[in-house]
Length: 120
Image 1 (cartoon, rainbow, N blue to C red):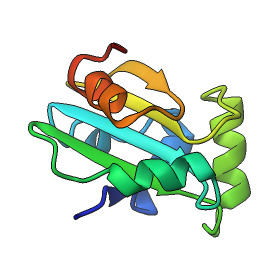
Image 2: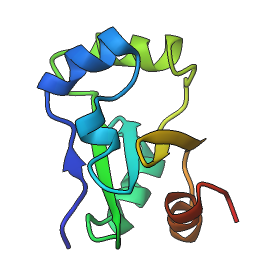
Image 3: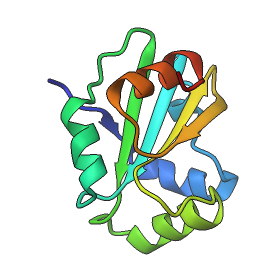
């Protein structure tokens, strides 16, 4: 099963500068989810087991940053700008606009947030 697309390194500079993911990420499809997490997190391991890149009209991106060369910069940004100390942290966009945020969710709730921007 194909997995979510990784956030490219060159998108991080724009993220840090504009305090939001670049349009090429948030507008990659009509509906987008961006997951920021660390690979060791048990909740992420569970989510990763059912996540795919095959959602109708939607695209899912991941930034697994614990082994990234910019780990501390990414972590501090997530905590200080997005005010998220928990992982996995998920941002949901519709038409490039942030519509919801979550942490660990079950697959059905993830699909609901991705589809409607609301938790079921």
